[in-house]
Image 1 (cartoon, one colour):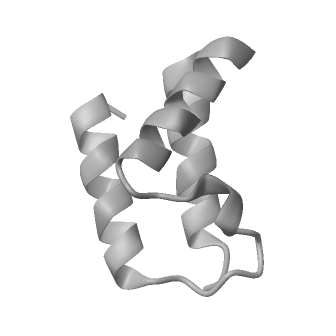
Image 2: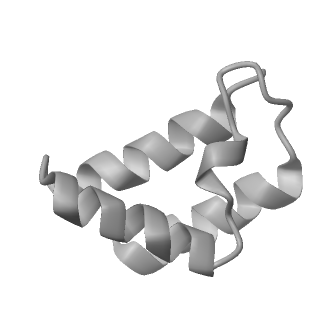
Length: 64
């Protein structure tokens, strides 16, 4: 299923930011610091199991 990574990124950002664009940018920056290049993924990007596992761990750390 292509696009799962983008969907996970968007879910994390939406839930943590509460709709605040400034907080959303901060969350995206945090993902980049943790090794997830948020701009590299699109709806047609192949899903890498390692990236999905990393996002699941980050979501757990952030309480999402």
